[in-house]
Image (cartoon, rainbow, N blue to C red; front, top):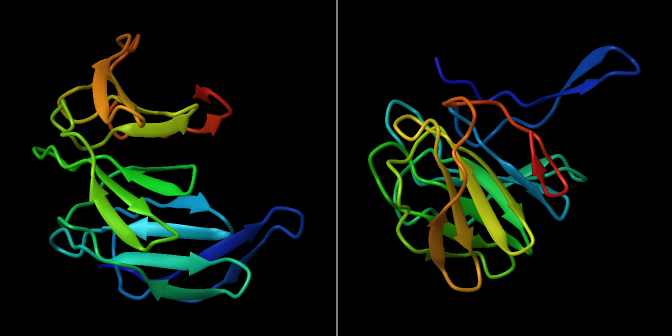
Length: 171
């Protein structure tokens, strides 16, 4: 079943709080935090969809932004007012959401096979690591030149690996 619950953990009180429900029940949720909002572009509800759900943390409300140009459930990273969405399996769409303009743009085609990457953004670049078929690959997207280059291979293959970005580091 697909759920639309949004909950928040208060570690001091050791309690969960129910927040506003998402616009649609879904799975494979990937979001990026930017300017007090969490943008959740594309999800899975039996198939991939183009919904772009935006959660405002301060007001505990959801709205929808411009839909994705292509339906997918890609991993997301936020940088300099934009949300970058890596592609789903077997597609090469690298999509960029300009939050202020509520508009989508296509970046250069993703060079890998897509799906299940960990991504992060730092210093004008977006890093995509691992994935379904590219488990040991690192791809680097240069925002200014709209181009991809190959980075160092990972020590171990990663697919749907959890990650945390802290400054320039992806853990």
